Structure formats: C-alpha cells, structure tokens
Image (cartoon, rainbow, N blue to C red; front, side, top):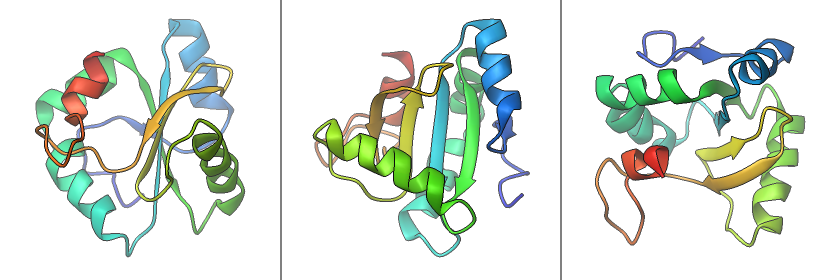
Length: 127
C-alpha cells in the first residue's frame, strides 16, 4: 500500500474496518485518491504524515484508504453521495461515514491550517 509509511492505521476497503468501527462505535474516514493526484499527495504530506493528526485519526476513527483507479465503484458511490449532500466532489475525496457506511460529512482537500475558506483537517477531526 502506497501509504504504509503513514502513522495513520489505514485499512483497505472490506468488511474488517466496518466490523471494527461497529465494535468500537467509531465513525470511519474513507479517503479516496489516486497516484497522480497532486492534492492527494499534498494532504498526505501535510496531514496524514502529521503524528498529532494521525493520533486523532487512530483514536477516534477507523480509516480506509482507497485508490479510485483500483476501486472506481466505491469512488462513484461516495462521489454521488457527496454531490447529493450539495458539495462539489474532487480528489482527494474524504468522506466521514457511519459504521453502516452512510456518509455524514465530506470534503476534498483539507489544509493543515484554516485557509482558502476551508477548515483545517484538525478542526474537521475534532468537530
């Protein structure tokens, strides 16, 4: 997995992360991107490699990393959900979902600090 060196405990798409989320009563972060996505790499460097943000993710979420080129079906489902919630889609696509897989919050790139009229990724995680 490309993000294996991140301090975030990433899971691949499958039953396991949803089972863990149900057992621990935690929401999931489904982060969808692709290898040549500029903002995916920026967010990886700025947020997913940050030890403090990784700790927040690991303690309060079950995190799933998806390559949209490997799983276009999952990308399509969550992209449609994001657009149905009135948001503009794009990549990275970060969708917060219930243990049943239902989205309740989403966004694309979240900066490490508030800018571009966007909340910081840390603000999103503690909201």
